[in-house]
Every structure is written in C-alpha cells, then in structure tokens.
Image 1 (tube, rainbow, N blue to C red):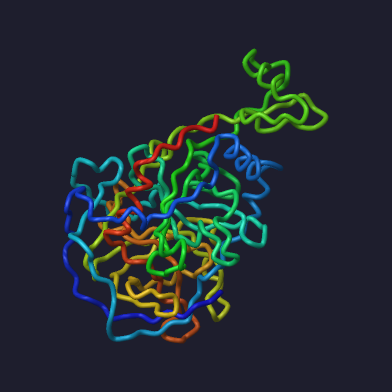
Image 2 (cartoon, rainbow, N blue to C red):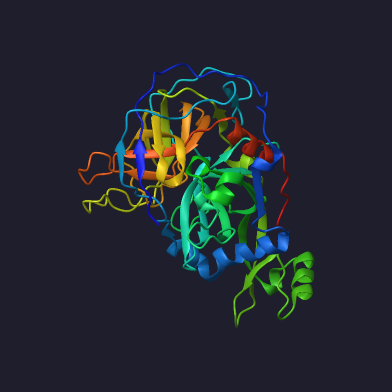
Length: 390
C-alpha cells in the first residue's frame, strides 16, 4: 500500500527547551491500547515461535516493506506546530545532568529489531528502541510495525524486541510485547501524523544451557514431570526428540536495566540536528543495494517541516538521509545524542523514506512530529508494569 508524501520547507533552528516532566493536557480517549500477549503463557508461546528449530524464524525473517518507499515532492508551506510548551523526559542514566564529549559515534545499545509475523504469515522485522519508563520496560517504534495496516487486523502477531540482534544471536535476550499503546487517530484512521507506538514488554528471556536428564536439578526434574507429553511448560524451551537432552528458558531481567533507555522530547522547534539510528535494508529505486539490514547504521542532519495530505498527515518532520526503506521503519531520531553515554532524547521514528529529487536514490526520511499528544501516549505506556515470563 503506497501513499504519496509532499514535503514542507525548512524552519529556523532553535535550542532544545526542557520543560521538566510537567504533562501537557491529554484526553484519555486519544490513547488506544491493545494486548499483544496478555499472560506469561501466551508470551512463552511467542518465545517458542522464535526460538524453535534453532531460531530459524529469527534468522530467516525479512525486513518489513509496508509503506516504506514513498513518492514525494517538496512544498513551500505547512508543517508541525507545538501544542504545549516543549518538554523532555531524561534517558535512563541521565536523570542527573553530566557533561560528556566524544569524537566517535558510539552506537546505542538501546536500539534493536522488532520481529513479528506479517499479514503474509511470514516473519518480518522493523527497527525500535528502548525508552525511559517507570518499570524500564517500554519500546518505541512506528505504529505500522505494531498494527497491521494491510489487512486492518488489530495487531501483528508474535511481537518481540531484540536489542543488539545479529544473525540469530540475542545478546541481551528477547522481550515479548505485552501491550501496545498508540494514538486513537492511528488506531482508527491510520493517520500518518500519529504513526508511532509505545509497547510494554515482559522481562527478557534467554536460552539456558543444554542438559542431559541425569544432570537436571530436582526443581528441573519436577518441571519436566509436570509438563509431560502434550503439556508444554513455559520454563522448558524444548526437548530434543529421541534424546534425553533438555533446554530451559532463563530470565534476562528488565529491558532498561540491560540496555538502558532513551529519553523523550516533544514540542521541540525544528531545524535542530538529530542522529537517526536504524537497520536500513532494501535497494534504492535505481537498484543499488546500499544496506544489508544486518548491522545498526546512523545518519545525521537537521529536521525540517513535512506534509503528507494523502495520509492525512499535515505535521511531519523530515531529515536528509540515504537510509533505504525496508527495515528502517521505526528508526530512532535522537536529539542531543551523547556519544560517550550513548543516550539522547527520542524525538521521532521513521515511518517512510523518499526520493524527493527524482534521481532514483533515496534522500529523505520522515517521522511524525512528537507533540503533547505523543507524550500522552508515551506516558500511558510508561506507567504500566509487565512482569516476567519465567
């Protein structure tokens, strides 16, 4: 499903204004939430889908290609406007301000891939990032990387976040989505101005050591006995057929404790430099395959006003970037990124890319403008506890 974007002009640069944590007005009915896996057992079933057959579904997943590369052109007016005073939420570890400098761009541990089953039934992935929250359990990504905008089904199936993922490896575990929070206008109308989502996740899980039956502890033997034939148990990952080998899942702890979490900025004036971190994949329109999607990449530039009337999006922001579309949906836009500490303020998520000058090379990424209503959706997610799977 392709839609056309038209882009507005650049506006003047100003400083990032911190308004503390005072919440802007937010109507309760403007936040939509939906369960992804509402019990630990349901979450275990999601884990089993991704870990079974030696993580074949993780390894074979393809970048998500829904509404990514979008024909576009620049226009002279319009663009986003703040609805309240500017505000920020500090990143995990940055609650007390400290000065830091770095000559290198150190990639954030908080960014990774979200995996899910698309409307085609196949495994796919987008980009996402961990953000600050009360229980250190919230992930931010594009709304269309949570809601199925192809079939209008409520949500995409088997949703997980994997920070630092690489070729089947899950260094900090996998985190199953529990509840997704979006703006009502995206949930109901697929409004491009509101194409963002904040998702609470369970504690992460890892695969434990493989053990023979004779090496199991008494507690593990009890679990095996309770499971029995046809009675799966969430503490057991799997038993190899025809062998006496077992593997158990282990608790990896909370997401934010393991990889940190970015802050949040909203109602900021445009024209400020941002880093965009994501996993771009796919080719440019001319066929050049510049990105593999296997490793985290970054781009850098100033934000400018953008519009997308075709998707009812009058308040977007853009950045000049060569990121191709597949896989880069959900990429994190970070203001004031501190390379030494690997943290900044999340101020956007990529929802599409464009070739704006018609030379068959992608040159622009776009994101919703984060305003007070975005903060309201974030706040709804950030206040909720998720719990453990094992």
